[in-house]
Each structure stands twice: as structure tokens, then as C-alpha cells.
View 1 (cartoon, rainbow, N blue to C red):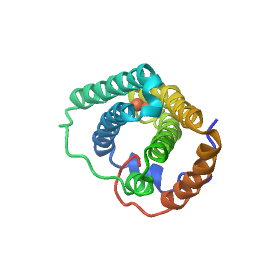
View 2: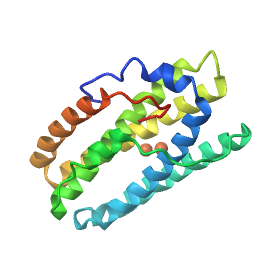
View 3: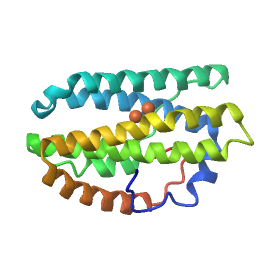
View 4: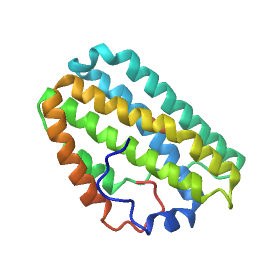
Length: 190
Ligand SMILES: [Fe+2]
Ligand SMILES: [Fe+2]
């Protein structure tokens, strides 16, 4: 169950639907970054006991990356450059120093990236049904996995320090709500 505090802005869906090739390239990079994020979390001492779980997430994200790359190939869309997301960098900017704080903050930022992906993939799965059945099915098939990653990262953060994780989650939910309202004219997932 997602606890996001602000709905996806109304202009997001028509904007991404207007340039599906660009969105697919952006999506490929998002999955690539999700895989590296899972691996990067393994550097934190507080997560040494979760290395296998983090590997499993990284492998799943790499599989998603492969699926998007295959879609790009089938559609004759060349793989392109990543576009930085202001929403993601805005969230990352508030990660605090100090090893334990950093681990909790990273987990919560990645959790909200997964949560927003889960929500947006669901929206795309529904919106694309009549225009692009293959893509609709593809997005719908990713919803559960990204939702599980969201929940796993929140549980991992709470496993380090439940009270601190809850306090920071409250902060990040407010920050997400604020940042998602900022206009972004580009056809991007985040
Ligand atoms: Fe993924
Ligand atoms: Fe994910």
C-alpha cells in the first residue's frame, strides 16, 4: 500500500504518452540505475545482513533493464542518453551524511522512487490498453515487482532504526509531494 501524499500531476500522463520512444529510453536508464542503487546499498554496514536480498533486487532490475532494451530493439528505437531527473536529484540532495543516517535516507529515497514507479507503471498500463496493448501489458507486469521493492526498502530502513526511519519517511513524503508538483516539460517517468 503506497502512502504517497500528492497525486501524479494531471499533465504527466498526456506528456509521456506523446513521446513513448523517449519514455522507453528514460525507462531503460531508470532500471539500470535501480540495479546500481541496490548494489550501492551493499556498502552500508547496517545492510551487510541484507546483501543477498539486495542482490536479488539488483538482478530483477537488470532483468527489467534487459526487457526495456529488447522493447527498444523490437521497435527500432536506438538506446540514447539519460536525462537527469530533477525529482530524483532533489530527493538525493537531502540525503544526510553520517553512515547510519545515509543508509536510512538512501533506502527511503530509493523506496519512493520504486513507489512512484509502481504508481506510474500502473497508470501507463491502464492508459495504454487501447493504443498499445504490448506496452500496456509490459507496464502492468512490472507493477508488482516495483511495489515489492518499495516495501522492501522501507522495511530495511525500519530494520536499521524504526523511529528514525519513520521520522525521515515523513520528511521524504513531504519532499516528494513538493517536488512532484514542480513543472517538467520533458517526457520522463520521474
Ligand atoms: Fe524495475
Ligand atoms: Fe524496482
